[in-house]
Length: 204
Image 1 (cartoon, rainbow, N blue to C red):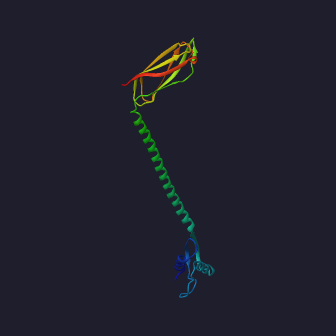
Image 2: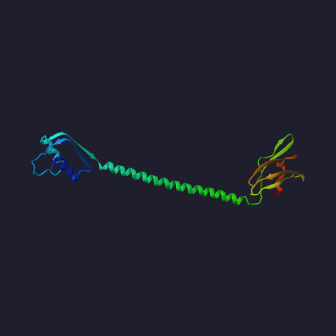
């Protein structure tokens, strides 16, 4: 049996962690006589050949560590785990987004069938301009359907029994729409009781 065969056989039985590959370049003569017992380990084969000067060339021993293989497997496992986590995150985000869109559409569908309803708010206190008192307000259609010819009345009751009234009319007010307006009085509204309300409206 030649040194190359012995080394190959011994490499398969080697207990060193990793895979040992022995590449012999040149001619290795048989270190023992024909029929003699060969060394059983790769180290013994190489040491015997070197001690006897029977290596004509060089021996390259390449150790491929199992740690490198295990590291490669770990990287692949991490990539697989990360890919799974990304898919789960994407699924959750898609479900949440779909739920939000569904709620918005449901609210819109539910709200558009509601009849007109109105909210009137005084946005500022009365301010005096050229001897008259101006009172701005905001009108909002809180319903879903369109309202036409919306009439807003303002009634000012003064302590001396004097009353002042004002009127505003909005031709068109769609659902959830806001519009602004104002009333003008001869007397200071802060000295009396002011009521602003929607008196009437029509449907298209």
